[in-house]
Structure formats: structure tokens, C-alpha cells
Length: 323
Image (tube, rainbow, N blue to C red):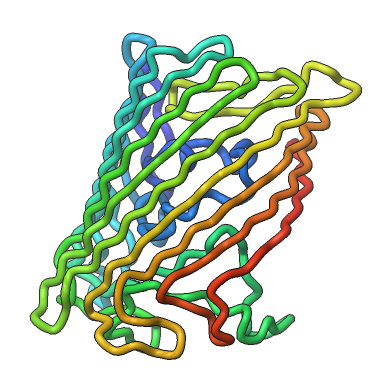
């Protein structure tokens, strides 16, 4: 639920995704690529609601600032009902945000207290494609395994790390975007540290970034909303041919987990890395219909699937109808 009686301030209470990052703030209907960037996946808890509740205060100022702050209790896996306490903060400066011309800067922080509850410590990025589960239905075999880049020590039968293994988990992020007419560029970077609270563990550090270039061949601009600090839909000017957009995105991630001291069949010791190159085209047939086609090429270092593959390609299509 949201209360908007203190405009331009909004107070939100309930189960919602916390505010962290430009691409996450943008609706999944109107992000440029079909999947959000892989950098988010080295710290996937920062902008998902998981199983919990929270409160958020957000608002705009001076026609160029947006900010938000939230507190939540999530991942209630303790038998006494204790959960993981999480804080998120985001501030955006957008001195240009009208008429297709956008200049956007943003800073983010997210922190959670891991003392009170068991949690899933695994770092398991999807690298731009949703795999096929190997339990039931169509079996993807060894190629369908979702790799664990780090974390995951001391898991119980429910894939949770025990209370007391880690103390705090902190993520800092930065975001940038520039758009003029049909051209836009955006980038984000984040850094995470999961601090150990036991002599049996060491800190886990991760980082990631992406950069994206996009161009609308038919001349339309990406819409932008200061309230939320986010991009919005491309609206076709030609009702017969719609709007055509092409883009390129480069993602890179790194996971430094010194708890991994022995190489396995799928994970060597040292920093696990991955990069993703994505090319795509979007056709906005009208304001309700969008067709997308993405090609991604992925390579990894220090980590493979069960067949020993450290690279792969994917072609993914999507048809969207908004009503």
C-alpha cells in the first residue's frame, strides 16, 4: 500500500522490491534487454522482496532529485520468526530529464544483518538466460545446471547457511545514463562484501558492471520519469510501422571467495569471472505490443558446467502484450 498525501513524498508499506539501481527501477516491460544485467545477480537480494515486509519513503525535489530509503525484514527462516533486517538507500540527480534529453546519476547502498536468521548464501548468476530446471519436466541434463560462483558453504537440506556464519552483507552501487533523441547510453556498477562472523569462514567479495548502447532507428526517444529515477516506454510515432530499437550490452562479474580452497569438477580456486555480450532488437508494434529478439555470448573463467563448458551462446525471443 502507498500513501501519497504528502506529495511529492510517497510512503509505501508491505511486500515490495526495494529500490536499488536504474535498470531494476525501470519496469520489466520497458527495459531494453529481455533480462536485467548480470551485475545484479552477484547481490540478488538487494532489489527483491523475498519473503518479508517493509516500509519505504521516497520523493522528488527541485525537479532534478529523487531519493528513497527503506527498511525491511526478509527471509524469515528461523523457528522463532526472526528474519534478516535490510536497509536500502538510493539517491538520483537528473539535471536533464525532459523531452528525450536525459542526464542521470545515481548512488545506491544496501545492507543487511545476517546474525538473526539462516539464509541462502549461494551466488548463482543466470548470465543472461533462464535455464531449464533439471528436476521434472523437460530435463536439460548437465547443460541445465545453474553454476554456483561462490558462497554456499555450510548449507543444510534447505540450502541455507547456518546462523552465525556471517555478520553483515553490504553493497554499494553507482548508475549513469545519458540520452538525447533516439540515442541512449547507460551503465551501472556494484561492489559487495559478505563479512564472516566465524573463524570457519572468510569474507566473500563480489563486483560487477555493465554498459549499454541503444538507438531507435525510427527516431523515437526513451521516456524518463524523475519520480522513481527510471526510463519508461518507447511510444511509436508511426502507427503503421511502429518503432524499431537496436542495442548492445556488455556485462562483467567477479566473485572472490577464499573459502573455496580445493578445486572441484566445476569450480577452480581463485576468482570466478564471467562476461556477457548481448545484441538485440526490439519492435514496438504499437503502445501495447512489443517483440524482442536477443543474442548473447557468454564466457567464464574458473567455473564450468558439468560438461566442462566455459562458454556458450543463446538466442531468446519474447512477445509482449500490455493491457
